Image 1 (cartoon, one colour):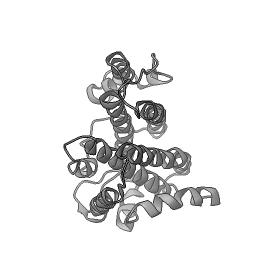
Image 2 (cartoon, rainbow, N blue to C red; image 1 turned 120 degrees about the horizontal axis):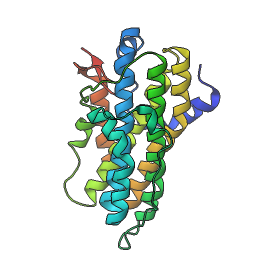
Image 3 (tube, rainbow, N blue to C red; image 1 turned 180 degrees about the vertical axis):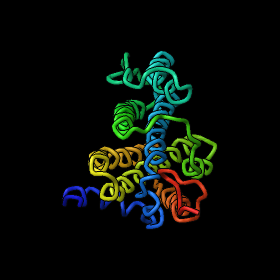
Image 4 (tube, helix red, strand yellow; image 1 turned 90 degrees about the horizontal axis):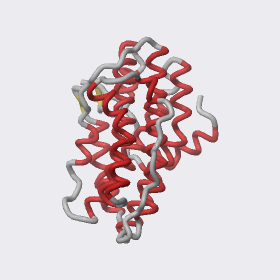
Length: 254
């Protein structure tokens, strides 16, 4: 059972999302045979969250040298995940080697750097923690296909700036908020060590969605409630409709 503090933490997340995770998805997720794909997809989601944050920093906030340092930081994680190279234990403690220098022309660059570098650090730490959980439960890493979820959101991103950046940040907010909501729903249903681990992630995931929204609001410099409402409806449809592919962010199992 979640503590009063955690329930209070989840309130704004639940209000932000238009729908809860369907019971049919939870029924599938709690089955022992679903655990490997759940953890494998969760692992990939952590890396993709880090990559998305890195893209935003490289695209909008830093000079070329800083951008290269970000690429080097994530490279060992990507080599392990996509090319299955290296020992996952060697990923422990890897850190960003250089300070990020903001673009002088960007008034929001430093805020973007501060929030997204912290997010990357946390997502990469979670990536390693998921690998530890997998090792403890005898689940070997293997490649799996991506779900429709993130693509379903991002295909609606506008193609001109700064609207494209604002939309990407809003999508990031929904992905983080849904992750937070699912961790909370899953925690009581999974083996206790995994449930405790998922509960421990709630605080950072809740802050990540708020950071994305704050950046979107500041950069847009106008009311973005219509765009938030638009993506809320898209996100809810992805979650509440039948989905042939069971994954961490998938819809109702077919």
